[in-house]
Length: 104
Image 1 (cartoon, rainbow, N blue to C red):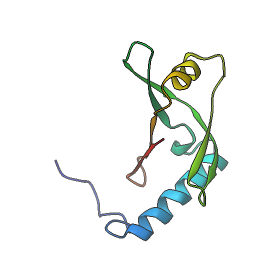
Image 2: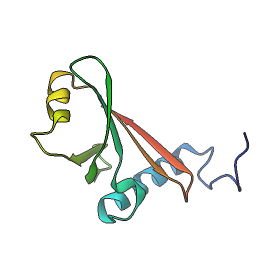
Image 3: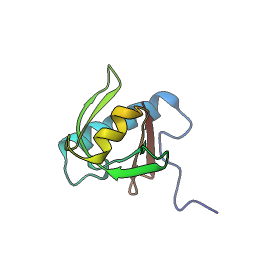
């Protein structure tokens, strides 16, 4: 399966990739129309099954390498995460052909 168009400028350069990822995460916080504003979060339910949800990216700290995601404390995902606090998240920007996967 081929890729449409040229490789992104950051491809093959770890520092450029990190800078691009950090810039896209920061933009996702600031711009509610940016695709990184609504990442998908995966957690494990009480029954052991995976759970995927779309959340809202509210904060990003590049120095600490942390993100802050918004959800309702009463939602099932909060209970799932409290019980099994391992999660993964993915953001994808089609226009830049950039996918970022986060774990915590």
